[in-house]
Image (tube, rainbow, N blue to C red):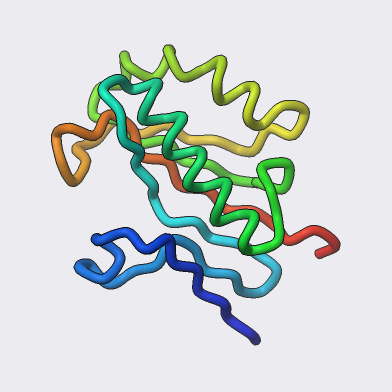
Length: 121
């Protein structure tokens, strides 16, 4: 099986020892991704942009995401993201889970992890 690793060049990738995404067996596994910004909505939008870039480099897109996990330190902050997430996944909503948990730094309000399939698999 061929394995392709995709780096976004983030400082934590080297520091912690991971990559943004791994393509293997027809699947694209995108690591938990945080974004920059002052609000949960700004961070959500930025994280989705980073994820989209990784998906494109892997050869897929949001229409092929089959699983998404949202992690937030405060579940009450999830609702402001609903409209953006609905627009992002459109007519192809993935299976989803939301977990309330601590994140690596208190400044982060949301972390998003996805799994996608490669088109044609």
